[in-house]
Amino acid sequence: MPYLLDTDHVSLVQKDNDDGRRLMTRLDRVPRDDVATSIVTYQEQLQGWLAYLNSGLKPDEVLQAYERLDELRRAFERYNVLPFDRPAQDIFESLRPICRRIGRLDLRIASIALATDSTLLTRNFADFSRVPGLRFEDWTRL
Image 1: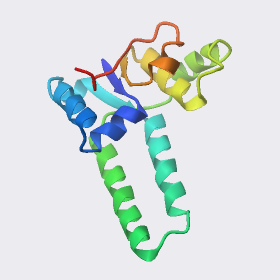
Image 2 (image 1 turned 60 degrees about the vertical axis):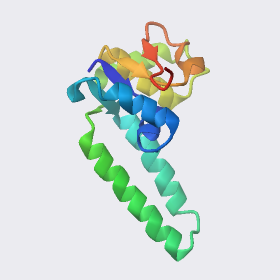
Image 3 (image 1 turned 90 degrees about the vertical axis):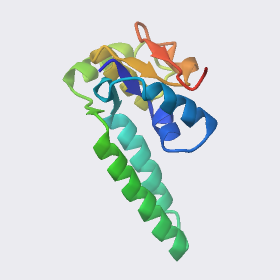
Image 4 (image 1 turned 90 degrees about the horizontal axis):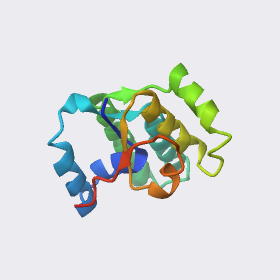
């Protein structure tokens, strides 16, 4: 997998805004099999929707939230979703002591990118630039 979408870039694909459209224009030029996301991104998005569903919503909001949760499920069925497997875990463990300022989930995503020799697509240069050997790009910029 040459390109791995981080959680922010997956969120942009799901939205209809300028950044999302620029990202989709670039993604449309790449073979579908060369683009993936990660199980960690799925975890982050699922946790967000579950927290929202458990936040004391009005009945109509509950219905809308479950609709969006189902949209998320269907969206991830269309993605290549890379696992957080033993090679990624080994990389994560080796990076953890030197990348303490990076959130655990971001470091897991970076570890998956390194384990699969992928370029991470992200806008989060501040954190991901601290990961040795990680290739990353922002496809929302022209």
